[in-house]
Image 1 (cartoon, helix red, strand yellow):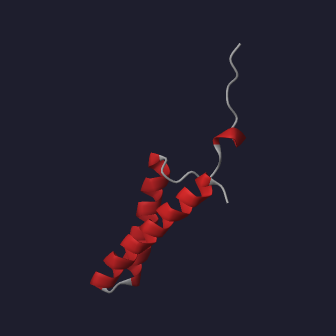
Image 2 (cartoon, rainbow, N blue to C red):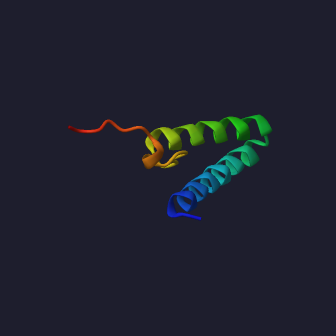
Amino acid sequence: MGARQRLNSLNLLAVLMISAIIGGVVQSWLLFLVSAAALAAIQIHSGDIRPTSRSSRKTRQRR
């Protein structure tokens, strides 16, 4: 397992733990799912969770 995969799994674990706390306090499965989806989307958008490696993305080559 590479470093990127380890960081992604740790970030996803943190998202699930925070969502579990939120859902547990309110006692709502729906709030757990919504907060997990929202936090994961924020992490992906900010670049903390990278679903694909940068080398597999098509990059523009300089001349």
